Image (cartoon, rainbow, N blue to C red):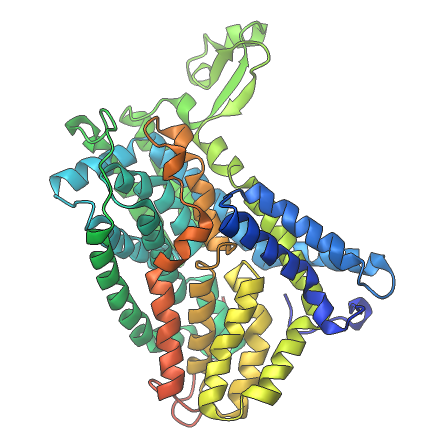
Length: 506
């Protein structure tokens, strides 16, 4: 999403610039009714909501509807959406392949040996998720991996599902906000003309304060919200400890990402190693990773059965049941509804961008609200919150609101580091808090598949997206820290206080 608009594709609406928010506004109301009021956690249902919102918005367009349609296509081709989609697909395949190798059973065993009970598990999960997200630079990938792997282990020992999911999302917030290789970190620095290293160093004091309070909150809530341990059969027995070998796979992803390699490359190496470990150690059969379920009546299926390598990937089934299966397949396919949803929401955001809706919000805040430094920084926080409520991908939200943050900050000579920190903290946090946020829905999409993977995991254990937002403690504390910082001046720097080095562009 660009901060400038091509005049030839500028949209005009009956009702003025505010009407450009109709598609997103309709979707938000739909999401609140579906998930919040009716308790229906269905990503595909949200797709219907945004589709109807886009159709309703079309009737308010002044001029040719073709221009409106072209803007929708422009929005769906934005790089920020593609980046999130790629992270979901790769992380999904990685998490499913590790799960096929018994990693969850290994975690249950480790929790029992280390005597990490249900009360402590959410706090530990928050710390581990924060470390992983900081290492690999993707909160979305962390939300997917931890929901697929750590969440069922915690539920099995009796941790409260809603609290545990909140801890996972909090860890994702921490990493998205602080990781030097995170898209949000890079965008926040570049758009505010600040170097990435300096931005990360300057924001640590805010992130760690919020993290300490969040950890304490999870310790307290974990003791008061404990559930009942689940009888998971053989899971957690001595024989399942071997599944922990996949800590090596996770370590490879972290090390590769920290060394500056692209997240796609880092996770790809993790997938390769997890496949090798599964096959060499006998943790999973080849067909559990990828399988061609072909009709047994086919002559080629019978012939391939005699070929050791290829035959291991072909599973004879009854005619009519032919399909592709395995961890690589389910890990990718499970995110298709979310991918469609995000593409449509980014398209709706593009409509609001081209229709002047974001500009109207920014002008109001600039002219009517931000009259002092204190109020200026407060409106930066509020402005990012408003944009995040309308755009599910935090990176896209940053790009949309970044020009306003830059303009307002320069008006009051606020340092680029400070501007970047306010921008990144709130977009990182709120993207995992709103029930329709991309990070939250990524984890929820992984959670929806758990009843199919574990016999003991019931549908009642699946957390409704609308119920988890109070428990994303680090996200809330991070927003609170910056509101207090804006009001008290904590950590405030002016342009004259410190000069940024040359901007690092990645």
